Length: 172
Ligand code: XMP
Ligand code: MG
Image 1 (cartoon, rainbow, N blue to C red):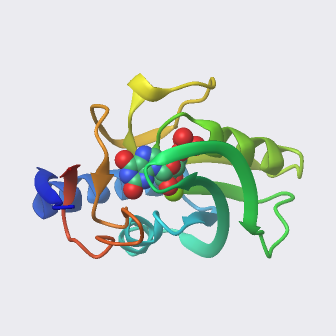
Image 2 (cartoon, helix red, strand yellow):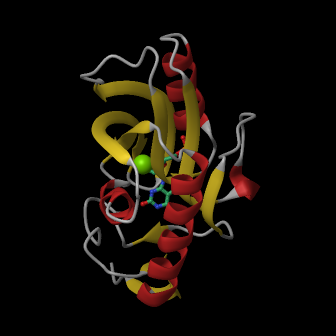
């Protein structure tokens, strides 16, 4: 099958928006230590760029929740790589690549909340509000996008295209 990718958000636009988000977070948490909780694998590229622009004492942790198989949501959630640190009393900032049905972030938010952090905020690079099934929204959104399958800048199709420097729509 031939796959064509058309650019939806350019490298320059991503960079500008990441800088804006980092400035907002740096102001919001001024003087605090934050724990960035990156959701593997899709949010790795976004998180790597974001944390380098934060003017905060920043820790970095990872979690992996699997709900996706190819381009279809299975609806089943698994904690494939659980959190290694304690959350209690910490300022947790979750970074996600894309908020789609909302199941992943809802699941993670509930798990984190039960561990009594000082605060939790959700930051997503992309938001597809048309696809939402569960009631959740992000505190910070990079870009609101239409219901298209997205690749690049960390997002994959069958593990391909994560290394593209732009965000593209996969046309099949
Ligand atoms: P939910 O539905 O739980 O899904 O909000 C979030 C996760 O689903 C994956 N996802 C995508 N991955 N292109 C991708 O590469 C997409 O267009 C897309 N939509 C959802 C992604 O892993 C995200 O974390
Ligand atoms: Mg993801």
